[in-house]
Every structure is written in C-alpha cells, then in structure tokens.
Image (cartoon, rainbow, N blue to C red; front, side, top):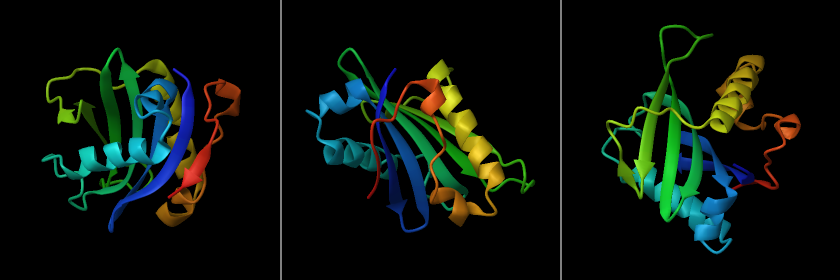
Length: 150
C-alpha cells in the first residue's frame, strides 16, 4: 500500500476526519483527488451507522482499492469514559456498502498509520490542536505524497 494523499476534511458540521487515500484508490478516480474525497464523504454521510451522531470526536479513514472494488476502512474516536484512553470504533465499507460482518480491522500499514494518529492525539492538548497537525509517516516509507486541507 502506498498513500498518495492525506486529506483533512470536515465531514459534517460536528465531525472532521483525516482520509488517507491509497494510490490505487485515487487511480479509480483518474487522479481526481476531489472525486475520491467526495466518494468517501458520501459513503460516510449516506451510512446508516450513525457515524455523524455526535458520539465521535474524529474519524480516520483509509480509502483503498483492490481489483475493481473501492474500499474504506474507517475508525472513529469515541467519547469514552477516559479522556486519555478514548474508545475506537470501526466500520468497513466495500463499494459504499457497510460490511457488518467484516472481521478485519485494516491492513498492517493501516494499523501503523492509526498508531501514529493515536500517538499524535495523545501529545496534543485537545482535539482542536490534534486536527491541525498531521502525524509523521516519513520513516514508514508509505507516503503520503501530498497533504491537503479542504
């Protein structure tokens, strides 16, 4: 997996997230980063999984493609009982459809990315500071080639 872009996006007025866009996923949109981000945003907003319910402080998604299928592994940081140890919820989408029984969290590179996100969140004073910084992934040699804020 090679990450071609990292996008910070307001998903709804009460929720923002970082979306890591894998190179093959971006290719499905002929390199149109806006189209790729819009697809992810529509998938989240059209889901009946209550992702925009206000129960989550932040989302991190990894958008990737395999063969002809567009996939999204999504993690939501919840407002758990511990300020320093938040709950993390998982959703998996294939072609925009929630996969309720998918047993997989994400790929190994995805876990590395999520670990860096957690480390960054714990170093920040609050969620507002966290959303304005990106974790360092340079030593992982998986990208991103581009980081943008929509």
